[in-house]
Length: 82
Image 1 (cartoon, rainbow, N blue to C red):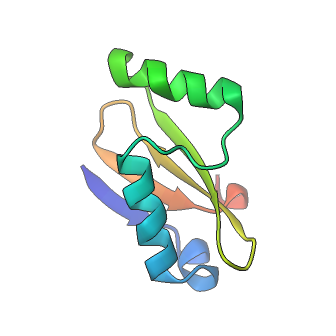
Image 2 (image 1 turned 60 degrees about the vertical axis):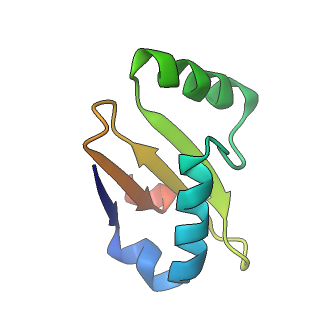
């Protein structure tokens, strides 16, 4: 699917950090998600539900990566963009 990022996250997080997080997301490294969300992601790999990861930039800016359940798009965004 498509990879997109919101203007707000592109403004405050360096692109190399966004891409590093995206590659972690692709490798099923869900970042700083809680145990509940981590378990939901692991189930979603089998059931086709959405995937949700949480990461922090070097400057401690929290951002999310969400892959849609149909895998048509993955969005990188700040929590306040949701």
